[in-house]
Image (cartoon, rainbow over all chains, first blue to last red; front, side, top):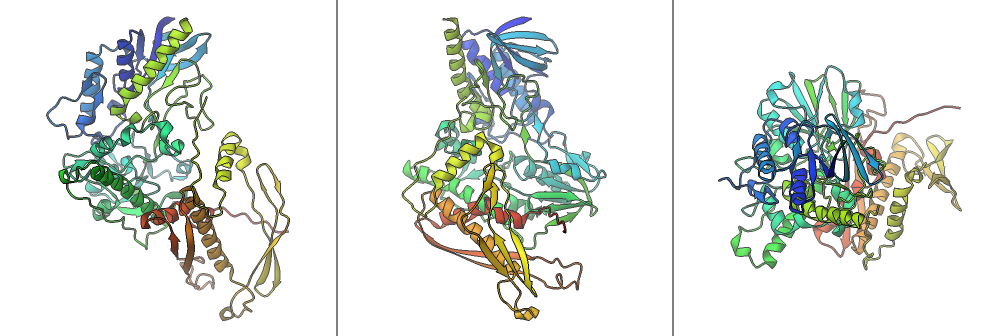
Length: 412
Length: 191
């Protein structure tokens, strides 16, 4: 059994940022990666996807975007190259093609079995990502066999879809992006809309991510939030990264010809049934967006910067057709369902009792109760930006300090 | 393992809702989720014609039978245009009343949680129904409501958007709103 003081599982932005901090602290470690660096970005994303954060915001410890398009959005091959290069300049000790199959506790540390032999370590950092599995609701079992069923991880582009119209379930970032591009390819698209987060791409002349960064929203800590559980499970905002910095919302999709339904609540006898709650979910999203815009306006005013930005504006409330139907006959031309209903982490290999009753890892800002065990990259884990590339650095710095202190104490 | 759950000091507003107790209950149920399983009950007896009387008493929750020190009765009937005696509201009007009461209670609770003092809350409801459905005249017409419209008139120490957010959040957490907007399986046995 090979030994490393610390084993990091996953060579994405989180694992690489942690590796960099451990190197800086001279803590020997290895980064175990099931595929190649940035594996999920490489293999589990659709063709047209770009980052939802502008290039300048791709900042990691000792490394940042240096290209000539700071306001652009990286394509997936660009993200892969960006992280690959980071691994190289950091001399990160990455073991690629190494799939972790089980982790279990030892007297002082953990054992990690992989398809490339076993490791023993004193500290363990889980940086395998928050989105390993596309979560589909149990009612998806009721989908008729003749209708194709896909997740956004399997979807690549409209040309590869089976014949016919497409029902997209979920109107967060994945759902609205897929609705936009599949509709643009000329297909009928029906979008099932539950809780969602509406956000303009740009506001008062700047990218919305620039504002979130400027007003300090991305740095808000997990222990400063009243209902952190709720904050951690918010849907991803309705954003897309395009060269035109296009804002995409339900109103723009409606203009493009996308049809809307409420939340999907049933599938039987070849029919899909939808909730009558669509109007309220749209009202909630409009109100929430306006609270964000108001907080930006307030920050601008109180900073005395009002003359540096265009005037405040508000957007058209989401239009909800009072005749919205509550059911849809799937024989009426729907060939594919795409379940854009969120993602979850896969901890099936983790044989340490640290999961809650819903299978989620229990942690306090990334610190797991099992000694020397940490997790990274989960939504709002330590800060609002924890699951962003830009958030990996600060979290890695905090957790590397905690990890280092733990090793020192154990040695004392 | 320490998961920090912060409870904000309940603000100065007093809408008569004990939010601290509700928040404590939520915390307690995190540890014992099985206690969250409730069963609500009603019984109903036919009186005459379309007139009936429901009796509502005990329910099950927090892992035990919960008895009340009184029972409630609710009557229903149909109006004279249906050739009935109009002794009480129709069942569908009681559904509207249930929805309004649920949302109104929610508004009060959310306002308390957010430190918003309510001065008055009035909900006005109207529901569309094509009675060709219940009369069996047209199979394509459903029996129930085609749509429900609710108007809230709320006076409170809050901005217009804050008041709108109270009503939206109340709908999001309302049991009756969920019962009406989403399907529910119904199982009926006889004798």
